[in-house]
Amino acid sequence: MTSEYMSPARKVYLDHSSTTPVRAEVLSVMMPFFAQAFGNASSIHRWGREARVGVETAREKVAYLLGAEPSEIVFTSGGTEADNLALRSTAHLLRSKGNHIITTAVEHHAVLHTCQVLEKEGYEVTYLPVDKYGMVSVESVREAIRPETILISVMHGQNEVGTIQPIEEIGLLAKEKGILLHTDAVQSAGKIPTKVRDMNVDLMTISSHKMYGPKGIGALYVRKGIRIAPQITGGAHERGRRAGTENVAGIVGFGEACYLAERELEAEGKRLTTLRDKLINGILEKIPDTVLNGHPTKRLPHNVNVSIKYVEGESVLLNLDRMGVGASSGSACTSGSLEPSHVLLAMGVPHEVAHGSIRMTLGRMNTEEDIDYVLEVLPPIVSRLREMSAFSASTDSEVCGGGHKNVQ
Ligand SMILES: *Cc1c(COP(=O)(O)O)cnc(C)c1O
Image 1 (cartoon, rainbow, N blue to C red):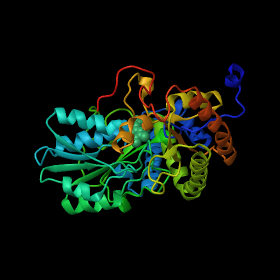
Image 2 (cartoon, protein in one colour):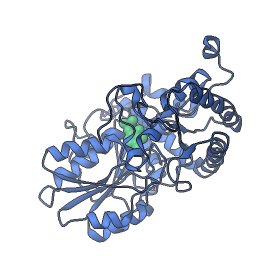
Image 3 (cartoon, rainbow, N blue to C red):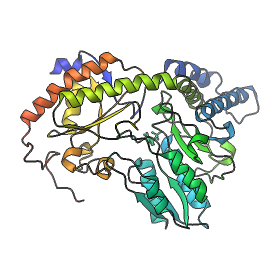
Image 4 (cartoon, rainbow, N blue to C red):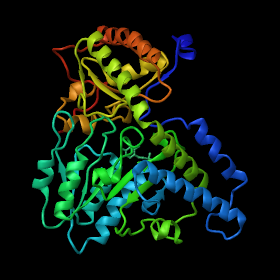
């Protein structure tokens, strides 16, 4: 086992929704901005001007991916900060208009936990339910709207189960009602079209490290005419919308990543979809008692999420890692809690099934041979774990290695 762990037959990274490697082309455009064009982009001299050109060229490239204008792009430290900026700014600026926010039960924690803080500040938040595919209905958004609703925040592509939400329709509804719409498009940007005008959104979050750019940089698209209250205060950077000396190299890399993603979007989307479906179908065919989580077709091209009954997701992950395969889990047993993914629970997946869920997210480097390899190593791992497992179809408690039972 040890030698296998040291040098598995193959190494297959299948966790691209957690983060991606920086592309070589991205790294090479970033390099000059560390030690040569290192100036502060606000400085008047040539060093500063060089940095400023880097930042503004990158802003154009990010805008190109989103079909936006460069002035509508606000750089942040990542997706989390962009989500925070969208929600907190809107909540505070529109406080006199109302205190109600609509979001969904399957948002990323950057949105959910921010909403919880806003609730403590006196805002009211409706967390919309989803169907068994993790999809929110436009009708449920319509029904949740009140006179005091100031913001709707619904993510585009779900990060755990890959379901693509009907943002365009929700956008039309929001427009009709005069309510701002924010979408977290961190997982969908660079994978499927995310043109802000087609999607009818006012605010959109994206993040660099989920699309082959560096970590620690992201952006909020802010439709022209919408005011933003900076959440990080200081200098007048980003037109007074986000203070702090620009992360020039990061911004330059992010811009290049956006540009390349837009150029390759269609071809890479098709390629990933084929690999995704091969992996999904292979797992469902080769391993009995498995179910696909998320929508079968309205799904991000790189997302596979399956529940493998009668095993713990964590055990599968450790065994996959030993075989060189990097995946992630839908449950949170590692954190010492028995609480499975809030997303799977919102979809009505039973606790014991949710505990056996694993997420595999594909990326640029993955090949058909990688998928063949996973389909070769995964079935015996599952058989072995099921044989070893103390519980079976008839006893499905104590799934996460003991401890207290869940309250739900
Ligand atoms: C990763 C992720 C974020 C957070 O982005 P960071 O740049 O890592 O802060 C937000 N939303 C979704 C859907 C994500 O997948």
